[in-house]
Image (tube, rainbow, N blue to C red; front, side, top):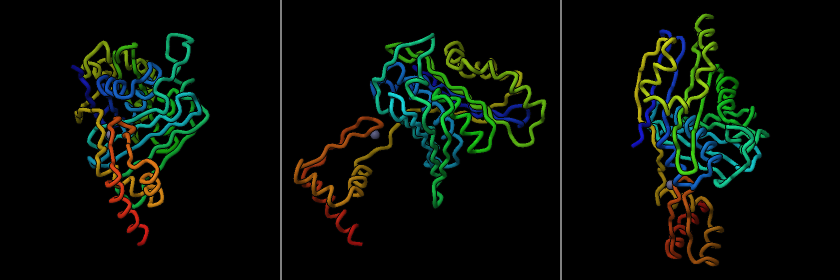
Length: 296
Ligand code: ZN
């Protein structure tokens, strides 16, 4: 039903590179899972779209990147986590957030707020994860990611993210990142900058054209060459095993408390809303594990 896809594209003989994604289906999935309002769909949808593009740049399938936006606005925290296999998941603190519209556009910046930071954590299985952080520019998200790439990764980048959403469904969603490579000519940089305006209505382009045609539509003058095609999707990798490990790390005292006061536990995954139930006996087993761990 949806034609989500993601391209890695070389521009102008390698002087720049682009990632173009259609993410309509995966943003719709997020809307359904979390019951997102229109503004929350736009805010989380843009963040998921940026994250899945960044995840597609990772070398290993199980490497991950998480992007967290805390802007002090009524939506609370916006979080997206993407993996090298082109999957992404995320949530917002307040999925029902609603604000009056001022113009044609959804007031995403006002919902997110701009008094805060965008934090990117890349886990590439090194000893320490890479952590980059920038102050938010506007809370509109695309500009904030552009600032992150430029300031934190020292890669001048153009970022466009768009989500077109009605009350019922996501009409179109997509994103484009263009990054100028070291050694690009002045002329190449100038032609990218000159066409920046064309890239801004990315969800409109995705609604009008198939992904493949939108490459021509948007990038034809920059001599695009598609290097790789991927299929992005919304997926959660939670499991009972992972939740058990999380409960063990809470510690013996916390587990003891759950056993005595609640006689069990329910843990809901924030990303997919799956519920995991633990009986009193199950918690006692975890308590043993936590006690052994703390004794070491
Ligand atoms: Zn989950």
